Image 1 (tube, rainbow, N blue to C red):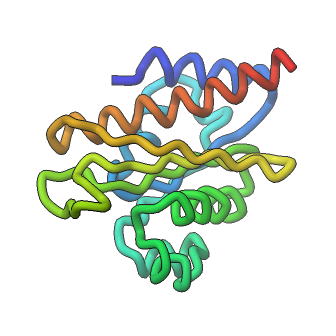
Image 2 (image 1 turned 180 degrees about the horizontal axis):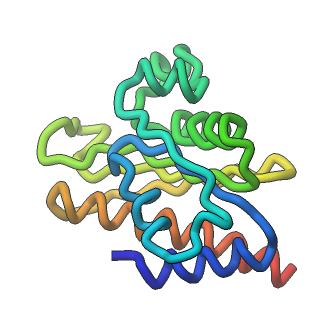
Length: 163
């Protein structure tokens, strides 16, 4: 799935002495599971929150109710708030978030099945949100989201190392 990516991300985090945590909705903990498939991941993986329900997004991650009302659970704004919230909750250097519509149902014309937002929060007000629309079935969409999340974090860490 993303085992090589998870190992590369883990090495990049370990080299920097950095930590990571996750806030997941549509992936149901699969990003955290993939990260922890790498032996020694306890050196950098602090934990994760599966915030499938909006109430959990608000109460645990601090996503403002107004954000959910104005933009919906599947939005750039919610992904950003989830990443910021879990970063603060777990006191990690980096936080990945994901919210989306895995399918097969739940899509609309403006938010189709497969629509996913992946957020990355970090120090110095780092906030990156990537929008994807996957075309697979439910499991394929979840796996694609995991890969994209790991790639996003790894790309950022590599850019920091180069810059």
